[in-house]
Every structure is written in C-alpha cells, then in structure tokens.
Amino acid sequence: MLRNFFNLVADAPDIIYACLGPNTSGDNAKDYVVLRALRSIIALSIWLIYYPIVALNLTYGVFVLDYALRVRYGDGMELASPADTNVIIAGGIALLSFGLVKRFGRPSSYISSLLAFTAAFTAGIALLAGSRLITGEASYSYSDYADIFNAGLNALWLMVSVGSLTYLALLPVLLIFFNQRRRGLLLGFAVMFLVRRFWLVLITTVWLAIMTTLYDDTTHASLVKQIGGPIRFLSIFWLEVIVIAATFAVSLIGYPLQSRKASSAEKPKPFPRLIAATSFPYVAIVLSIAALAAIVSRSCSELLEDCSSLNCQFVYSATNAIVANAATLLFFGTLVVQFAHNGFEPVLDIVNFFKSDQGHRRANPLSAVLSVWTYSPFGSQHFRNTLGERLKAQMNDLTSRFGPFDRVVFVANSLGSMMAIDYIATVGKIDNRSTRMELVTMGSPLEYIFRHYMPHLFPAAATFAEKHELK
Image (cartoon, rainbow, N blue to C red; front, top):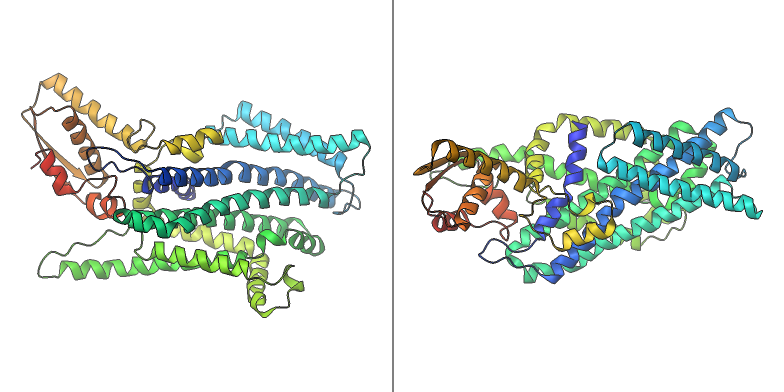
C-alpha cells in the first residue's frame, strides 16, 4: 500500500502538466507560450527533487553512515576531526556498492538513473578530498563536508521554491485570461504544493529520525543546529500537511451526507465525485502565502536556543517537538496511509490516466523540460494512449474475425467510459460512418471530474454525442 502511495506521489505531477496543457477540446489544438513556459519551469522544479535532491541526500547518507560507524567503533572521532582520508575510503566503498547493485540488482530505470546521480556526487566529494590530500591543503573536517552538502541542498531547494513561487505569482493573471479552466489552474497549483511539501517534510523528518537513532545527545544537538536552515520551519510544513489532511477528512465525512441529500431531492441533483475536495486548492494557496509570510518575516537568525523573539518562538517550540519525535511521526504517517487506502484507489486511477514518460521521469533535464514544452495529452508516451491502443486492437480483431458491424454498443464503467470515448473520437476522425455507435456509461468521470477540472482537454458530453451521432 505504501508503494502504491509513493507511485501516486510520483505520478501526481502529470496532473499538473494536464491542467496546464493545450486546448484540445475543440477541433483545433491550441497551446499558449505562457502555459508552455510554466509547464517547463514546474517540470524542472520537480525533476530537481526526483533526481539531484534525492541523490544528494543519498550521497550525504553514505558519509553520515561512515561517520556514525567510526564514532561507535572508532576512537575519539568528532565532527571537527580531519575527514579527507575517511571520505575517500567511504566514497570508494559506496561506488563499488553502487556498481554491484546496478550490475546484479536489475534496478528500474529510475533507480538506475538515481544511482548514477548518486555515484556522480559521491565521486565528486571523494575527488575533492583526494585533491586536498595531494595538494597538501588543510584537511576538511566532517563538519566542513556537512556544510558543503547543506549548501548544495539549500541551493537546489531554493530553485524548487522559485518554480512554485512563479506559479503562485502568475496564478492571478492566469485565472483572468484562462477563466474557463480556472479549476484546473487551481488544482495544478495545489498538486505542485502538495508534491513539494511531501518531499520536503519526508526527507527532513527521515534525517531527523536517522540522527536521533545514530548519535548521542551532544552530537545530535550539534548536527541539528548545523542544519538549522532547512528544518527551521519544519513545524509550519507539518502544520500544512495536517491542515490538508483535515480538509480531505472533512470532505470524506461530508460526502455521504451530500450523496443522501442529492438522492432524496425531488429531482435528480448531480454533484462532483469526491476526488479532490473543493476547498483543497484554496487551502493550498492560503497555506503557501502564510508560509511565505512566516519565512520572510522571521527575525531569528539561529535555530532554537538563540531565538528570543515571540513571533518565532512558537514555531521553534513546535519544531523541537518534531525533532524529538520524528520517528514516531513517520510511523503514524504510514498507518494513516494504510488505513486510508480506499480513498487513494480512485485518485490513483485518475492520475494513472494521465501518466506518461514526460517531464520529471527523464534523467536528462533538457529532455525533461522539452518534453513538457511540447506536451500533448494524446502522445504515444501516455498511459491513456496505451489503453486506447488495446481497445482499438480488440475492435480490429473482432472486425477481422466477424466482419464489419452495423451497430456497436459500448457499456463502460468509470475510466472505461473514457477509453470508449477516445476510441469513438478516433473512429470519427477517420470518418468511418458505416457503424452505428452507442454508449452506455456508469459512473463516468467525464463531466464531474475531467470536464470539471480540465474543460480544455475534454469536450462536453452532449457536444461529443452530437458530433459523433451517438445515442
């Protein structure tokens, strides 16, 4: 279940690309430069998380583990101890391990690329240590190497933040000029917010849990203070996660009430299916602005004990509690995912419909950006297109075995209706009118999910039926 949850997080950016995609609901596809540029910026931001940020954290973990082992089994090892020789040895062992995993472990394409990035960072740090030994310069300490890692990670996260802030800054203008797709624009920003916060909270909390487990109180306190910048506002980010979870929980509780009310009405009363809470995009915007204001207005330059200003103290007190209970928080987080799996399943189906090999899935950043710049929801690299090709193959097989049909009735449930609609649209494009098409749907997401959020990608049901002479 946790693996499915991580797959959902990994595939979620495809929803952002779709929300910012070209207008294809009419006869002619039309894209816009501003949306192309924004898609590309977001793709680069997410790519930075999935490759260099994760890889740099893994590299950092190699040397943290080496230091922890030397502290536990060595003699007098401290953060201020010379580390060049040890870094070279640890880097060499790690590179050998990466090579063995890649050679015999048969990792997926993403893991293989991630190992390549991690190996490159590891080799770079080992070469830096080697150059200092060769030139006879003063040896770097473990603390110095930690500063290098932290500086690199801070720079990468800053670039990710710039991508998110660009979307936030453009959002008012986009809502004015693309009012028809306003829900999709808001949903795209909310998904960007959620993906970024998820990785930020997860990575930081994992590190806190690791440090709490590996080190004694003195070393732990020193390391926490050293990486104070990245975790200074961790409590705010955790608060955001809690608020988002509460938003979905309230919607989940209210959905049966809404359903019963609609069912008992004198006339049928349609309402959107519960995939994303209506208030979710607006909550994400408010939380983004609030977090930005808290960061900009901070008056404390150091973490925890050096903070004397009242407007920072409540933030740091909460952060203290998170630092002390990081492993517990992760444990309860996994329980929530496990117990809420029924809620993830329909969302995962919807996200899978837009899944492709574009953007953040490509190890080459230039390819990642260009693939999203030329984004098309009907490309061969989309899972949606793969489903359509399977249905097309089945229909061709039936036709070849039994001859042309005068009448074909599709009976489709949920996303199956979208596959049928795509197939009927394809038949319409080649002007094949010899077969009468009929479509019966049950729980189709066309109007209340896809049209609700992405009217630029999907035609209205009535318009589509009239155009293709559907009954």
